[in-house]
Image (cartoon, rainbow, N blue to C red; front, side, top):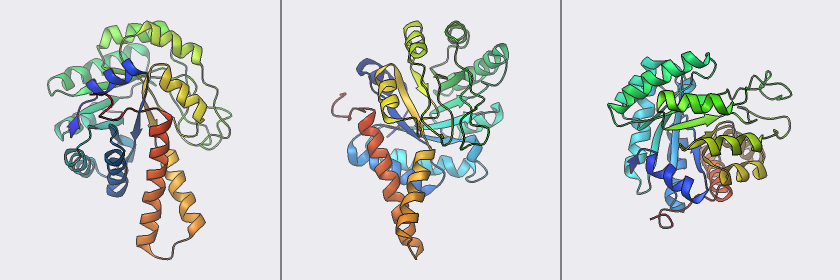
Length: 281
């Protein structure tokens, strides 16, 4: 069933677990993620990132996401990830996304607030929930080498001011993760996470979950993070399976890729202690 994240995040906050956010880039990945959630009886956040619109046009992503979400008996949130411009976000809302992210985290705080307010007002008219980001979850300069990143930690006072000013529904925080593949495991600032959790009532989300370390992510899920975004680990898992098996036909390649992504998602459902729909009724 196609839903917003409101009730799902409330349950996650109350019971101290997280829900995986599984970025899809084609029909196969979307189907694999939703089918895995269906098989395990778990809720799912199904994001599509604006950055991937060159690979899969937004209109096609909306059709794919809505089809599998509406077909599923599990609650599925169709979420626009890292929306960078308001026109694109508005199109996503009109196309049926139930949740959108405005990412103006690289702007100055006042501009981030202004853009987020505009998206919140637009989304409210359409029954859509909004995620924003303060601080900045960046990437390594060389993508696969995270000795240096452009990430900026979230400041607690700024986060409180931001939420009060925008009335945003959930907040992405920067506590040490980065997008892409790490050279080693990141250092997560759990003290900062605890401070933000104590200061805010709204659900917190974490980007850059891939390769962040199982112990780190499990602790984040217990410490107030309701949604953890995973993308790179799905791609890495699929590539590893293909390299090991070296299939010689297209159908076998697709099957191996889908099986690998299912395995990765199953692992994260277990790691995040995501409750099944029967458990949280």
